[in-house]
Length: 349
Image (cartoon, rainbow, N blue to C red; front, side, top):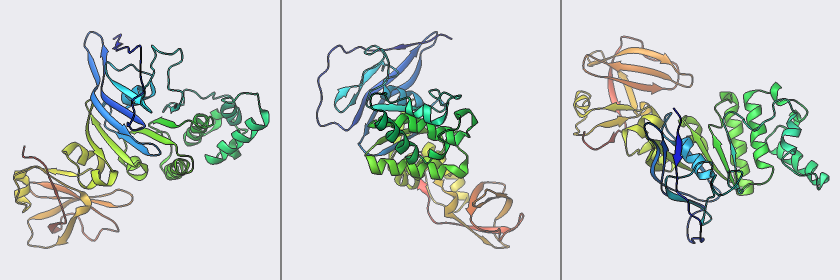
């Protein structure tokens, strides 16, 4: 289905003072076709300088579209996006879209020349006016991303994680003020994600860079972001510090997305011994299990999850998942008591 973007053109602009570095005000993006698709729906965001902001949500939530709107690759259908108080120029305003103070790294490494060497991919972003500076700057940038030893290798011969480091180096060599990343760890092996996240955080600390990244994986964003934005169906439904959203989500979607939390209705909660009139969320790590032959619940199954074991516990009325680090002290079929250290109440359904 062919689609076009409905957009708005502002021919003149004056700087607005007192705004955060990036100010997204009531922005929508509607793709028009046989059926209009509202990709982003009246979203407002404030992004401060020298921070890492993560946008998280399920596929189709609008997070990648919002990233492209911030960069200027897409035109907002309504609302305004400002950078340092100025409207972000879009495709209508300039020949090559993308804000000059920002750089974007896509998840598919579209900008990389796979058959050129790492050095050439990165150095090509600098002019030849000062070759000594070009040599020095390229070497420094590759060193920051821990890939100087790969300088003479072809990108085609690298792993996904190594290619991601090349793409980030290429984006950073001209010292942008904002780095935008779409699913930056999607092709990075789990064993190497922590190191890459650490390097990005160090670059932010050292340079004052502002990072906005999109992800569907809560493990990525909880570990490295300063601010977290949760999107669903084109809207922002939660925002705040990662730790706050993890322990005090404002809705069921956030609780499930960030913590894989048990979502329990009020009637199910009563069968667990919890008196509430609301839907509740219980994180797996907040459940303790005690063996008791007279208890009403029993262990249905035990699953190895790497860092922990997941216990499925229940009876004919209700079941629940609990997490425990260390070798299992219970077996399938054991009768157990459930003890809840905490739970989160939501509005009554």
